[in-house]
Image (tube, rainbow, N blue to C red; front, top):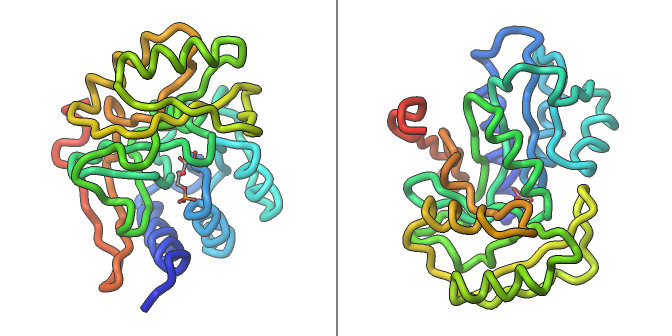
Length: 231
Ligand code: 5RP
């Protein structure tokens, strides 16, 4: 039986195959978290001919730099051919909850810039309905209580401050507990309208294109149908 971390590593290793179709010197978007840490380590040892990486967090930047992988700013590229990241939950339509590592804002920016979003995770992250994992929302600090009240009113959930966490952008995180999200795209759009909320952790309007799901029986590759046409 594989450990949870072993499953994460298996998903991360499988992502290397997704780089094989890239032109030499391509810039890769890199997410954040323990699964992505395995991907960064594997990338460093793979001999893949990438030109560098755009990173979604200071933590991933440090790990990439420690491996000697060149860091590139998003301003320096027109688009990312691929973005590899984990998720806290992913449903069968490739909608996700992300932000457990508090990097959701930069992650959403890189996802938007990417032609292909490859989600790597272990099978425990696959759900039928999103919301058991508390939905992270990054907020401007002075708006925290106000946004928490608005989130509670709009969602019926309980928005709790993730005390002690300051994002790479200097903001705070609220986690909304007690949700069962029937319409992820609609809720994402509604939450985008809240003054003082920087980003919500629903990745539905731009979900994943490919899911590499590590199970005890091996890594399954799922591709969202008509990835390019429906977003
Ligand atoms: C960070 C994220 C991560 O992708 C998510 O939390 C999954 O992390 P892990 O790979 O450690 O389980 O969204 O903000």
